[in-house]
Image (cartoon, rainbow, N blue to C red):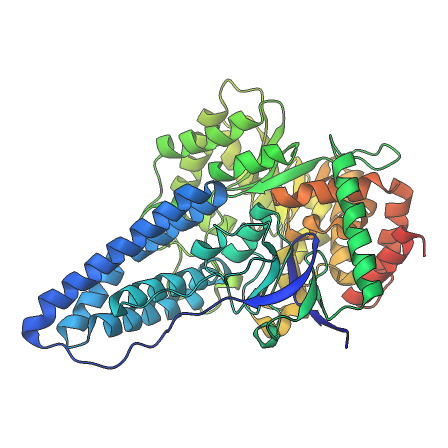
Length: 560
């Protein structure tokens, strides 16, 4: 019987195939004791196992290349974390076996990551995989992995380890379905880099029986179980039409009647630039600079990177788009991206505390260094540079940031991120201090609905189709139009091709997204006129829920 399950689509496309389950490693080592004279030997076994696992991860990364290499090398660093090793050796010295010490030390660190906000919590699956690999090596058992199959299949798992995902053959693995994970998990990142349709956070995914035929829609997040012949034919036809549209759509973002909507890429560092260039990005709409700060020392950072190091990293990105637009977001520390040297340890509610621009204004030397580094990086380049501040709440915030940019001698457009409802409500006031706005829809939804983005039970409030959120977008875009300035979207909402048309209809002037989404959004815009996008936007805003808004927009744009 045909049924539909719903998760979160994280990699566009449709795949139809039989379910094959990923094996899982034994997580619980047997109990045991280590005598005092055995302690050095057991500690040596752990060091050897950790070194072997780290070397294997690095080797897999070299084979995979691209984003996968960065992910796996980060995992190798996680395996060799000195503080973790100190904790493991301490537990062995207290009488634990090597296997049990690894298991318990990683469990303690896991709890810290899980409670440290969305960004670090997204690394929990990576940590679990490192632990499983070390424990398996110590026990002398093979690490279960990708199923052996001669026929193409849909891979189903509780979650997928980067070490396994990175080397998957897209000719065999038609799509992914996982019970856990999210849009920022490494499963999602690698699925997009492989061009494989993927749905994550699908409750009950692991209960799908081996061999069951499923249709995975990575755009909508739907998984159809045992689709009938007519449904399969329709899905296949839709997939072929989409491939043809993607092949035909090239060049800049533009509606069918010639309205320009620049399509930009979101990047987290120089390693993401190549994919953006391949996808035809017209520039960078969100360059997250946290990567440098998080790389220094343990996750969370021990100190700010030097001006020289920052300038070199920033210039790598700027040089990739010599005639394009690159918008850099200054350090966004706090809440789900805590930094030990900046973030207060005792905030009762970090999401509502000192984060983003507030942190930088409290530590002006960190902001000055970053702005000077950006000025050095842009020197002599014809790039159109924009610099924006996160968590701008009002005109005073925007003015303080603009003053800091001028004082640092930075020649760039100065902008403000609209992530707080007050900034959308008073956007015209904010725009008297800055040249552009950029909407971060994930945080804007969190604060508009008073719904923590890390709480799964509140996920419906994180739906970017919520009409109230669309109202705030329209308000900010309207203010920018009135001030003859620009207003882009750099949140996950821009990567949804249907929603991208609605955002265009609301008056948004540019869309920035993960590189893999750009061809899909380009193709969607090319199929519709600006007037159609405006009608779809009006229909969505007139709805009463996110689901109704999506359906209303689809009806308008499909001509139903």
